[in-house]
Image 1 (cartoon, rainbow, N blue to C red):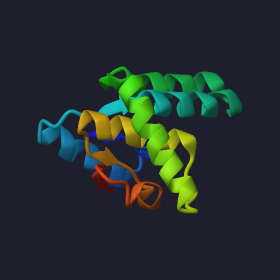
Image 2: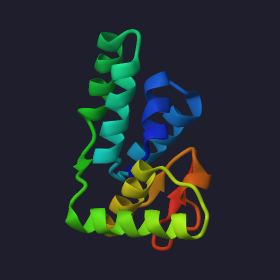
Image 3: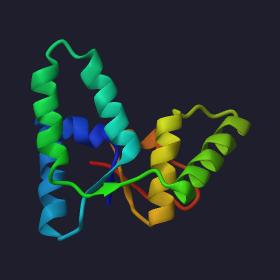
Image 4: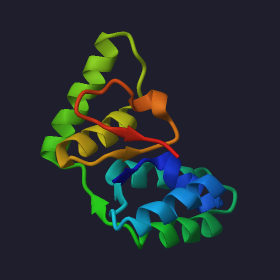
Length: 130
């Protein structure tokens, strides 16, 4: 299962529903993974944070335990097509979300997010919330 940035942020904040979902995933022996665009978004937030050292500690604490999926060539192509399709249909989507969706699609991973509307309707991407 691929964690979207919203899940990682909620995990860092200690959100109870997120912690419950993380325990459920762990108990089911499903690997929870993180992708390159999520790491990018977390570090953008770090650079804007008033307490960067504290934020960096939280980020590293969460990320060190999660396998990493890169934005490789195939995922980049898939993300670009997803983004283009959304643009053509008049829907709005962050490029980073399209990249995450491309990574999930190419790697056959379910996408775990709080932001369902960002990812619904993307062919080949299964979305789960918490």
